[in-house]
Length: 468
Image (tube, helix red, strand yellow):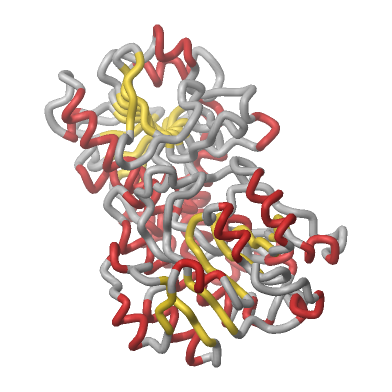
């Protein structure tokens, strides 16, 4: 801490910015997190805006961005102590060590993945130091927006369902054949309709299909979606108003799902004697949100023939038990509401003892800790890349804190950097300071003196997701 508290500071634009490197911290105890929040291109955008940017020495070297690239972008290279001092805003991917928060000037701002439900001490330290903390993972778009491709695929599947001669979707098993990112809306719509079962297939099986199975070819779905009239899209939006808060603005959820699924497939091939090739893996994905969709993507890329997708209809026993018992790979993508965490589980201790077969791999994409539990009861604390799994009763369990570290480091850094720059300079214009920040930013403010100035219409948003 280098200056006394000046309340007017919080009402000024951010002009002096620090980009901090990753070090050991509460969520990075082994130092395996080596990514950086901004690329040199991201720093160059801030410099072009008129900001003075200090970058901590070697902040990006582990992901291929040397100090020379940041200098060329207009930054000054600083020590660990210097990068936190005399700054209006410090940007860091994961939350810093408590000692680094204490280095910051009172009234300054920290933008990071704060994870305050899992690390409540961080809030106390920031409040003691009078440092405002914005949790990246809690910044959401306001209002919700949905990509046109998402809406069109959803409406195209609705048209398919309406042509089923009176057979409602809840009496069918629905199987998507092939994978396309543009089919996300259709997959979510199918899941919410409560089908008897939901599957992702790499190809259409041979033979005559059963009468109660609906195969949805994603290429044919895309063709149908392309011809959905614009008027129908507008009519749908008029009848189904968008939510006041939408998607996370800073996230790598799809990459998280892909990384976890890739790790699980490779571990199953090594550890499970029943499995000889990806095509022979019996896989189940729990949930159908963004991280689950990323897992489906990676399963198809790896040649997993069939993935069963757990929907709300499947969450009751004994249905979920039958899915787990038949699986070689279980991937959890369900993020439960906070009221259910620690009281409701999809994979239980009893499942590990008597339902899951030895050699089965369980990958948790959501994660948690002892005070913020996941839907996988045997996983109490997240694992780390250097020691990514543990074994209980012959079942392999993994919940890596920072899944994109497992093969998606560079891609995730580039994605985060683009998103952070947009939050700062264009969409939310956070660069203008906290006093001028829109509601989506104020909801993500989790610590510091500016919280007392937030109106009751901007309650803090709480999220338990540790991934990305």
